[in-house]
Length: 334
Image (cartoon, rainbow, N blue to C red; front, side):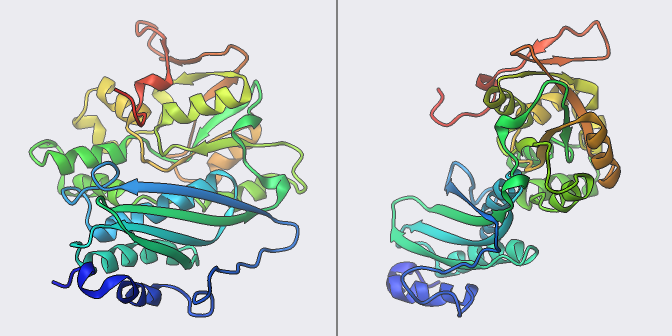
């Protein structure tokens, strides 16, 4: 197989340019046109081999898909529609050229669903394979979703099941587990990990249930770092707390005959990489949104004035639990 060191930087760039629109690339920078009265939204996400993906669990196509999806999810979490992305690659010289092309193929397969082009980037030599994506989007200033906009009394809505991605990762790392799962259930969980779907489909529905200009702000973020992390981050930014109902958190059906209730809840709260939206909005509007989405969308709690995030259960024999950021994954933690 041809290695990157055999064709050099310019040879690799020539191969990768076919994934980009010819009318945009070719100069020192890309020029993107935004609609009138729109705000530009910019987000950057970095993925490192051995930390965010590995050849054991992720093909290059899936790594590319996940990298693109993570950035589009960040745009969706702000209420923004994508305009384009740039891709920065750090690569060892002995990486196969075909691996890089497959990575771009996976990114393209994800981006094409949302009419989003790759508009540029950079390639450098690195001892570790690294993918850094910057995504650009646009949103009207009155439709921006911010973490700091949650208000006491808001309903907390999640747009889909949680724990599926982590379950898929565990199945990939430990093929011997999950004996009680059907092949279809295993495939669904693994797909949730390898090919997550950014929830850009929710944005038009939010516009439907709100009159414009929107007078009521929406708080929210995506759940890429875990459901508990998302609720805690929103509450911290908004200076509020929350009470969550453990029984209302949507879980994959496959969990019922595989994991204990305690394990299932841990997967949902702290597994991460589900890329769903966690939104805080008035209860009546939250119910309207749920009716427009599938059965996996649910109201899982309420924003409170008490500063803590408390997980409660309908079974009063189960004690209340205070959720914290330290229980989930954090870079640089011991």
